[in-house]
Image (tube, rainbow, N blue to C red; front, side):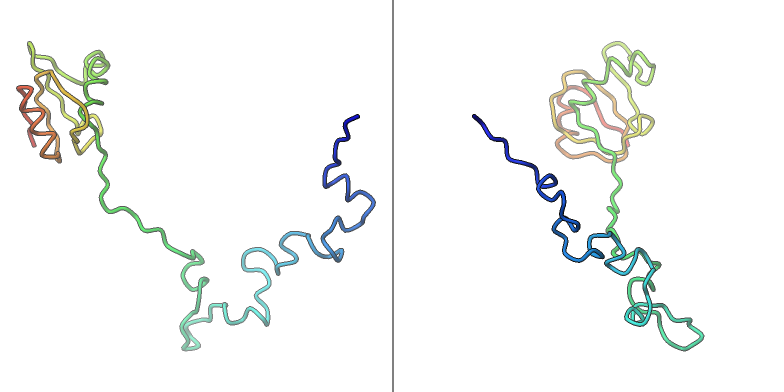
Length: 152
């Protein structure tokens, strides 16, 4: 005969507090003085912002637009693409007329496609004339080795 152990909630049935002590505990934010700016009474006075007319600087988190810590934003907003992704997307771009094909040479403007930096991951065998604002030196070498060139 196999006995299955009862769940924690089942074990607490019949016990008014379910293991949380006094009945007032475990009620959410009420036990912590409220949510947001609530409860900034006598004990929270040091966190309140004071009007600048009183000649005092506001203090703490609330003084800083209630935003807490600031996220450090990346100043380099590069949308990158690798050579392998160009080769993979080339048939689709030709079908949608975003890339021109002149004989054996492909002409593409990565700025129009939404990219501003070209990186060298992958191999390229087609002759391509690529217009892009930023590129890595190894990407330029690979494109020129395949018979193409990069325009700025």
